[in-house]
Length: 457
Ligand SMILES: [Zn+2]
Image (cartoon, rainbow, N blue to C red; front, side, top):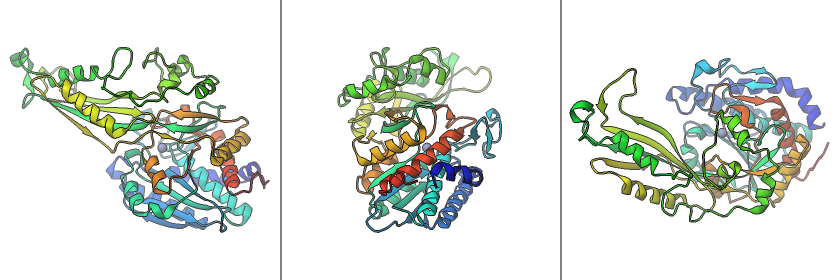
């Protein structure tokens, strides 16, 4: 049966199953949701066992690792996804409860609908199709679905060290990215790396009366602000010595492809709701979020932040600062230069401490000339009606390069079906039905193509 016909017949049941998956409040950042993470992993285990997979739960929160062998000689694909979600807060901005999925305006609304449960579910459904269609999986599948992606994948790093070798695969498949825009199919061929740090500035032993000591007391909040302001110049250049040394010059072929995208200043202004863009002078917006590295302040905390006035000079100030890296920047070297630069900037009278908040991750890229990329390209072309454009995304999936290395360094296909308008990590996250069903169609074709059963009807 043709995938579109099968999808049409099965969609009520598939929606019901997906809704069950979305109903678990599997928030990895909040400890009160530990039992919910476990319950979600159990649900996945049962679902995969019903599909004939051998399944184990590993660690805490549990990683769901499932395996089903295909015919001998068939290739092995490793699918990676995550069942944990971002906290849904602020709840008052949701139009309906985040863990009571509903369909409105051709969209599924729920926390995790797009990132990443909806996209994980696409693969569960594709395997179901393949097993029904061929009586067996036409290729071997490892599924690794973790519950800690949003908080740093610590358990998975451990599991990969112990068991990764046993999961040697021909290709890694991930659906946790998005199209450039609706109607513009996209395959992600690069992700930026990430170095995430925290800077703490300490001054007086305690908060001081700003009248009695203002004029002589070193102010950590002001010291931190001054220090942060020196990280970037007015034209958006990052000031850390050597920061750009290994950044590649833009590839002209890639630049030409990108000109086909509606990636104007106005496009990004609309997406963000701002009146002007910031960033490095001399590069187009799409270049600034993909092939150029960045530095951002992700959080700032100091002094009195409650209601009304309190006249103090704070004892301490903290900032979270992260850098997104591009090929071939070395995350460890960048971290070292960052730390050195910050210590040079520390003004007299305060103490500055810098630390890493998680393991630095390098940028990631995937070649477009592999048969796996071409299989994905054909699958998306069939399902969405036009040839996907290879893009580099600004975000990071830090675990990916480790995963790739652990399973024998196969190509990684980032075949994501989200849209930039899905509001991932924000209130009212949604996943368009067109993306769900088109994604399922493409994923079925992709697996068929890997197994050599190309375009069977
Ligand atoms: Zn995700």
